Amino acid sequence: MAHGGGGTVEHSRFTTAGLAPRDQLPTYCDQLTVVTVPVSRSGRPAGFRAAIDRYRADDTMYIEARTDAYAQTRSIAQISVDKMQSYCFHVLADGGAETSTGAYPRRSVHQSRPGILALDMSQPMSMSRHASQVRALFLPRAVVESVLPQAQALHGRVLEFDATSPAKPSMANAIADALDRLRRLDAMSAADARQRLVDSGQLIAAAFAQRYRLSGNIEAAEKAASFGQARRYIEAHLYDPDLTPDSVRRACGLARATLYRLFQHEGGLYAYIRNCRLRGAALELLRFPDKPIIDIAYSCGFGSASDFARAFRRAYDMTPRDFRFASQNWPRSRAV
Image 1 (tube, rainbow, N blue to C red):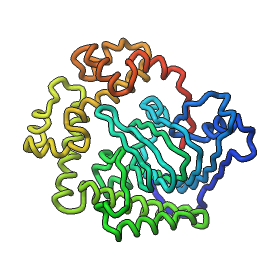
Image 2: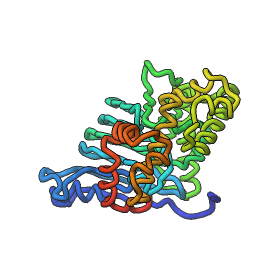
Image 3: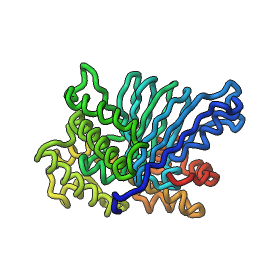
Image 4: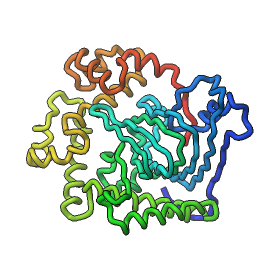
C-alpha cells in the first residue's frame, strides 16, 4: 500500500457528558470496535464518565481517552470476526490497570504507575482498568516488526521508565517527547501524521527491544532470522502429528539449546505450538459450526478429545462446546 499524498487526519470525539446516566456506559461501549465491555444494556444507574478522541491517518490510529473504571476483553472470537492484526502501544498516563494476555501459560501484569503496555491485536487479552487517562497507538504489523521481528512476543509486556528501569534516560526522554508531539496530529496532513505515528511507534518498539533484549545488534538480527525460520516451519507443519521440537530443530539446523532460547519469550516451544493449534481450533469451531468437535481436535493436531478439551478450557476458560455456543450470537463489529 502506498502512503503519502494529501488528505487530512480523521478526528472524532465522543463524550458521555449530556447523556442520561443509565445510557452513558452502554453508549460508550457502542464506540468500541476492537474490544468488548461486559455490561447490562441497562447501564450503570450512577453513570459513567468517559471522553475519547480518535485520530486516523491511513492505516494508523491514535487515541486519547479518560474514563471511569471498567473491564474490557478481546477474545479469539472477536479476533476472527474483525481480523485486526495491528500492534497497540497502550500508554497509561494516569490511573491503573490489570491485564491478562495469552492462552497458557498466561501473562498477568499490574500497572499502578505510568508505563506502556504492548498488545498484539491478533492475540486475546482481558483488562480491568481503574479510572484512568490513557493514550494508544495502533500500528500495522510491518511497521513494528521492521524494528522488532519478534514483536508478537511482547504481547502483555510493560515498559516503565523510572529509576529502576534498564531503559536509558535518553530513550525515555525521546519517547516522552514523541508522545507529546502526537497531541497536534489534527493540525497535520494525513501523510505527516502517519509518519509521526510510525516514528513514535518504532521508537517505542526499539525501547522494548532494549528492555527485553530482543534486538539491537548483529547477533540479535541472526536470532530474529532463526526465529522467523522456525516460526514459518511450524506454521507450515502445524497440524502434522510428527511436529516436535526435534523435527523443528532438524529442519532449521539449530542446536537444541538455541531453539529453546528462541521461544522462551513465548513460554517455551511446546507452549508456542500448543497455543497456535488452539487458536486454529477456535477458528475452526467458529467457521464450521456443524463440524464434530472430535474431528476438529484431531485435524488440529490433538491426540484425543480429552486432551483437546482440557487444553482448550485451560486457555479460554470454557469448553470447546461452550465456546461454539457463545460465539453463535457474537456481534459483527464495525471495521476499525
